[in-house]
Image 1: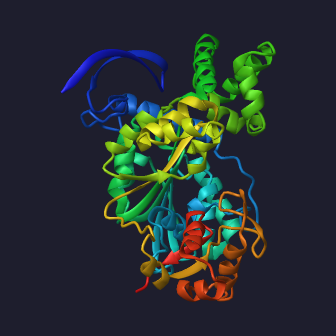
Image 2 (image 1 turned 180 degrees about the horizontal axis):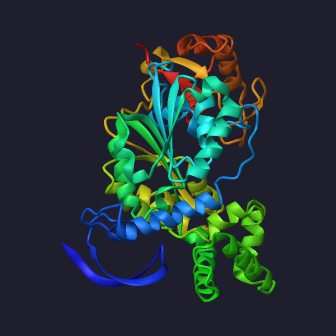
Image 3 (image 1 turned 135 degrees about the vertical axis):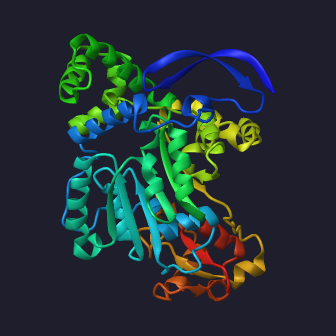
Length: 451
């Protein structure tokens, strides 16, 4: 059944516009704008193809991301690109065989910054790096060759093709990484469904899309620049567009909302023209809210696992000064809690990043003491600073260890990286099962079920 007709505001490739929609009673959002109800279209012709060509031209002009090329392993450790860590985040446990061959798809790899990590962090994986831009792929090849060497380069297949041609790739993938890509396509839902078809059952898919409210000033400037470029007759000329956009920001008076947001939040990364153009001159962009991102997910054929930046959606950081109010907010269903954070603190939600899966994917919660004691434990490779009482967690946040937590970790650490019996570590450290659960919850240790 359908509810009443409403006028809503949406942001798409042509900017903000008013649209009259008839809302479903149970499903509210912008799915139709993303292609859920659309009939099949030929992605090689018409407006669809024209939009894709514009996006390709942007990234051929300004290959993205512009990160420097290095002759060593990349700096840092992004756990989302380490399959055992991302699998543990999604399931609560380590993969059954961490050394089994993996197939990973980096969909929309750009200049290969994510590909570089995927190759380094997953020595048992073959990575397929796909992108629309030949210029970006040229940089990606050089990046992998310099950073990963010939052996690493042999584990990468580069594919110059659209996301909508992913069906032409052979087989399915254990992990798909698609960061900052589908929202730049003419049809994000069709793009996500194409990826869903290539994900193996039990596989995990990491997606990153832009958020509307946290990028509101960006969206306004994008629209303003479209108007200015139309008059300037520089539409589609991204080099001239960058020059024009920088002049506009310079001309705006101090205190202007768009100028101040650029200075306080984005200016450092936007010193490079490639980043600046990607932000303000992109010819195609969909921005999402919590509601519309979940409608996208619900229509994709994949199951939602979790946001991969859960700390950002923790209501405690916003409402801890009023425990009664916090308790009231925590009683909301999950999606409404996430929406509440987005509404109360829009500046902190500039994007949504989340894991999806194709069933079946079994989750282990370690609530049973016997199951917990029978497991084996390893210290997460994503933490830094151990041994020590103060460590950095997988997201580089400081974490103070209790004496029993440290004692348990020292027992596990003594195994020199090999899985160590949880029961034995509990006995030698005098820690409790709840202590182990806290370490698992904070991703300090990873458990493997007894075989």
